[in-house]
Amino acid sequence: MDLGLQGKKAIVCAASKGLGRACAISLAREGVELVITARTAAALDQTAGEIRQLTGAKVTAVPGDISTEAGRAAALAACPAPDILINNNGGPPRGDFREWDREAWIKAVDGNMLAPIFLIKSVIDGMIERKFGRIVNITSGSVKSPIAELGMSNGARAGLTGFVAGLARQVAQHNVVINNILPGPFLTDRLRGGFEQAARTSNRPVDDLVQERLSKTPAGRAGDPTEFGDACAFLCSAKISFIVGQNLLLDGGAFNSSST
Ligand code: NAP
Image (cartoon, helix red, strand yellow):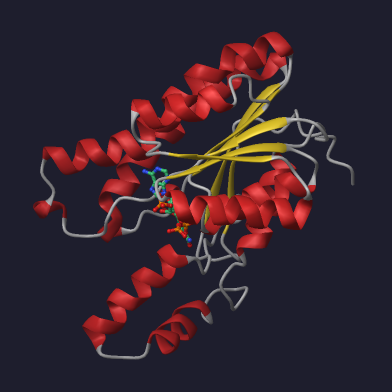
């Protein structure tokens, strides 16, 4: 299927690695011109080069912290009128909520709730005027099935999800479509880091823990970031304007429900 994205412009946040990188690659394959961001300039430049080589797309690397005003302004300066915005960021740390002070919470809310909201605020009126916009927020399966030790992630992402549910329904009439993708376990650096921490605590090999946990899911495996990227590109398609305000769970069937 031709997604109808040839020549469109996208900002893909937090895209030097993992799920953001996969979304950038899938969009580039559809002929989308990209601005990609991440904090570490060298890794970001390397990813930009790889995407250019793989797809021939125009890719501009804009280093910066997307949780900050300056980081967002830099991305928007490089792409002031995006057709597509992929909101992504690192996730808050695990832990016991008794250890988290106000500063830790503000950081989580800034990164995983307010950064995407302020980016949406910056681009949405232009999308409405141009009668085309696609926004995908990468959140987490924890929005539907909270993970106790990721309390700050549960909280901040639930806030974003609630906000988006309202806004998506205000802008859909203008062919501006906002949806969220909720990753389950995708074997990126972030997920591997979690398993490495558990391996140190339990004194067991990382691969055993990965196998033990993921073989229990209906799909019997971890997600491949490539399939995440392709789902993201699909939700950016010119053809999906009736899919509005949805929370698409990509978890290999792990969340058990008859109506998800
Ligand atoms: P990852 O492999 O660790 O990649 C994170 C990317 O984000 C890197 O490119 C990183 O580059 C960039 N980044 C981090 N903080 C940033 C910031 N403040 N500003 C700009 N860029 C930033 O992580 P991932 O697995 O792709 O996860 C992406 C998101 O999905 C996270 O929020 C994660 O919590 C969520 N998630 C992932 C899974 C999973 O299974 N992988 C499951 C549920 C939810 P720099 O460090 O150089 O900035």
